[in-house]
Length: 309
Image 1 (cartoon, rainbow, N blue to C red):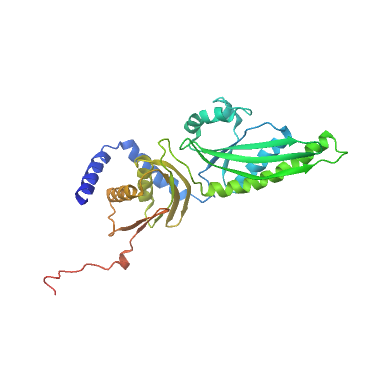
Image 2: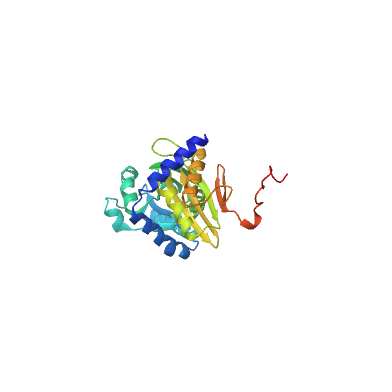
């Protein structure tokens, strides 16, 4: 096992020696300018596109989508509503869900990985009542897969006898807005910890809390660059936060966690940090914790036990 690891390190070092000067300059510039300026904004790495799957009632639909977008925005998600961007790849207001999903890879190439939310608002007419149903399905452009779905309880709205069509539409829109606010709050919770995603090969995508402590800016950027661009199974990095000596992010990957640990160790050694000497590294099913060892807390050498016994 040790020989295999040494071979992996040797092979990886040879590959690293072929990295272009351009790559090195990019990493250096990022470490100098980007990282010091990072400030935490909740869910800043998430891009959200919200679509409607049915044209039940124009006013009801508009108010429901507006409410959900507002909920997500207030929670810190980056809600994209760029009509010209979407239309440039053929997506318009009444595009079917299947068509939007077929264009998701093109959308990801334009704006990066994002979450697509399809809101289904259905109104069922009865004589003196209307039944409202509302649900949402979430898809990831990163894995090109279904994430999850959610619905709120159906509502039966009684329409007064003397209520005109405009009056009825207003009551429906008000109730749809209330339901959309409830749905939006649930979506916020789902997006804060998405589960159940899988990549194109059916591998489950794990989402790990990563915390890097007491590294220099350059070391952080080098390590993150390797984890993003060279680790097999990488899907996305979201929720980046930099605060003093702590750097946090959510790391999305379909890689085996045991292999991930080996790759992290190799990368740390490549940037000049030795495991259990310079840094401690702990990987669990939900977390990666990497922190520099304070020399002041080191136990020091065991000494020459043969000579000084």
